[in-house]
Image (cartoon, rainbow, N blue to C red; front, side, top):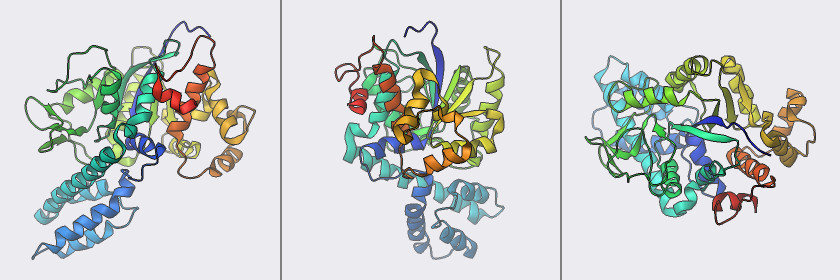
Length: 369
């Protein structure tokens, strides 16, 4: 199938993308916010036990963190906005505890899984390296603090990552990578000038909170670049919940979707459970979100439906109640990132002019073998 014009795809990747990488190789570590509540709460209790004098209201707030439904970002923001000095100090302590907890989990993942920890990201980059692919990567946006995605890029693009800003430690590009914009910074960046990479102290990041301060360098520059990268044909979202704590991001998506060079809104695709996509559609109807089961590219959406549910008619022609019944029958831990990647790889491998092999695209080859 010859392609005459490639669509420009921008990826928006959240913590769910990295969790999908970890889960797909049997990793047991969890890095989503809902998973971090308990270990954060335990560290908070240790913090409290060391304090001889403590505001009683703080202990009440601390106990509430053990609830997996508690939103840490909300709590930090509420405490930050409090007129109480004690509350604001506790917000600072919470941010430090959150960083320590997530950093420990990520270091454990790196030690246990090595390069396997980012193999789905590597497969994604390999997918777009195939000449017959009808899409090209316009850029990648991520809200993640981990370094799994850039590790995949270092491997794929001959030890080079384009962060949009100069970071000491990058090599001169031999193989040009797509631009990777880390909207909230990284635990791999050092808060110094010039910015240094892979340092373990004085981290350069935007901590959790509803209001994320982007007024200073490099974030003022990075968020401006994000606006340019969102001049695309397709925005494909992987593992990003688009929750109420991402208000600035939602605002960016809405404004760029209706004001860019092509004069038509870009398509928004979400690689996740169709049930979750329906929830997003209800929350944000103005984004006109599509599920991966709605995709017509090389029949990927129909191939996914056929593989998972033995459905032989287009999934979009099944009513929403039946769709939900089919999807609900899958385990809650189903890895939609892997499912989409594998289906896309199979669709490409089925073309007469394409051959996915362990020599040229090893991670994709593993998915379809």
